[in-house]
Length: 243
Image (cartoon, rainbow, N blue to C red; front, side):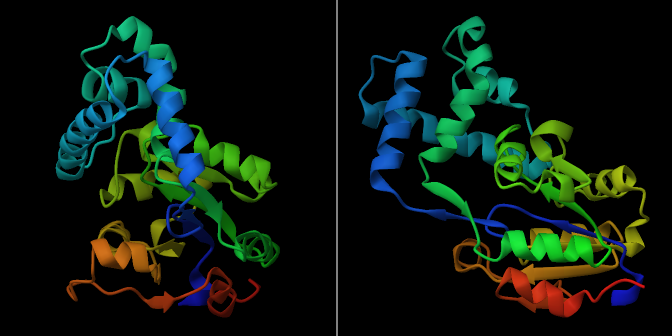
């Protein structure tokens, strides 16, 4: 199976990067978000309202498998009570601050070396990620010097389709010019990532076990990955040098 794989696509959240709690960093993000919006509400009331609207958005996005672009997310879903003309140009910054309230997102220590080695071994690499931000992932791979190694970066916030909709996988495969059967996907969600990959007809699915994900969405046993790993560098045991 391994020798047929030409392209390896990777998830980002809890796969290539994890979240570290940082109380000061998270508090600063909340303050900056409130200042940017110009709210007069207390922090507790303001974020309680945002969380309520966020959950409503997440519910419908998971049901429809559609993702709103940042501007629509903030003007229609999260801050519809504010003038759209004010919120619209702030959408990108608001998204980054909203995500920062969870903590610092940092790459796993073996990500960069693994990505570079897979590239050296002759694999086309790409990213397929469900995310509400349009800039955070491209900015991260640029700052870490990884942009040149990813031929395609397919984000749900940009293409407006969410995993496990097979269309997002097919779009990624089209962008790199490789048929789905010769593509592999690496993700952390034992249900969504496996289901979407298999529905798209990808040749291989690999789950990277992440406790934070497993606690929220444990495996159902209905769909199974081809491989299960615990560290990114284990991909090098699965993908030999292409000949």
